[in-house]
Image 1 (cartoon, rainbow, N blue to C red):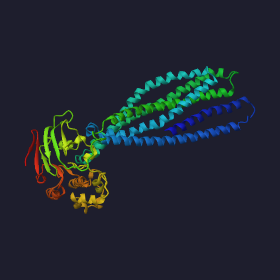
Image 2 (image 1 turned 120 degrees about the horizontal axis):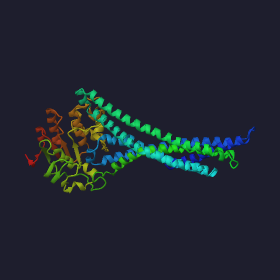
Image 3 (image 1 turned 90 degrees about the vertical axis):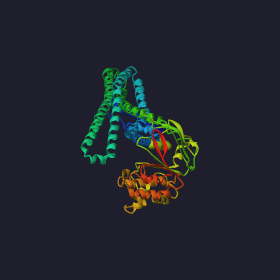
Length: 535
């Protein structure tokens, strides 16, 4: 940023020199009627200054672009990092389109303002003050017209500022809606095709797109109006100087060079006037983005993200003590729940839908914080652990396999690299029975599976999710309806394999399926009346 400011300051000095050199040349011509004055030295200097000015402007533009992209990248990384460490309760209240819009075009507006507008502010200020100072030096009386511009500019800013700020918010909301619709429709595209509702969803998107276009056009029209009008006001002032003060300026006290210099510097003021208008427009757009950015960054991260007790490998003793929890504005899901799980024990949790089985898992993984009571791991309250080290003790297989567009191997590793990575991938794939269908795939473990694993069957996706959970060899496994997509034969084979795979681990099974219940040392039924042991 300092480099940009230096370049723009030098550019301003060169800009202020051009009218003076041009005025001297014109004054020499007017002062020597019928003669050809020697202007070679002046013109050479003028060409050099113009060439220098061009080079400085190019260098400043390049530096500004470098700074803009650097700020943009830093902002995106910081926002994304912060979003990753915020609790799920934050994301429950947000549409993903809001976060996507903030990390994409909105931070682009802010970075442009910071890198370009603020960097050019010293140059604009210096050019304006320098031109005004020279005008006062040439003719203090006539230069008094310049302050008359201030009220005109202030009125203009007052009239347009509130409208521009309001339109910026509407443009942003319309763009967020557009992103949210597109993301949702692509997510449910199989359902859209199955019910033949393509026309309905396309029409819905088209209406949102048209709404965004209308607001964006209104914003662009207002921005296009501000700059030229402010430049026009400044130009009127320059013309006023010419009309009112031509007699005074052309009197005996003023040389032709001074007359030309006064007029050229008065005209020069139209340039910073337009630049200030552009800066103001950028400021109004960046203002809303900055407010939303501050709101997101001010949101507290998950408890235990930055500090807490370290943990190497847990033994696996888990205790739920008088645990109660309710989601915001909803009835309690769990109330005074008590449950102990011994190290190496496999426990199955069953119950009707909505009684809190998956919530129990989410609380254990600290996706949410308990309303009252506590959960302990090996006798220590889980809230005291550093959250990342704590979560590394678990292998989690959710009911819906959360896969991404990449290879099977990449989905198994899932950002958990290790020294003996390839062997661990093969071991995890074998334990989860992924190797049973690898031979049918074109590239084995390197096969690309598409978004959300769309190129695989439901059972294949769940096996990959299980392999991911086993990859890091965690001491505790959580399987939340992990066999729901298996056929009976595959589930039986899975259960048989799991007897060995889950040996010496603490395992929590959320399941209704009889075959999976055979894995459990104890079966717990969770209901509105609390916990009841079935076997």
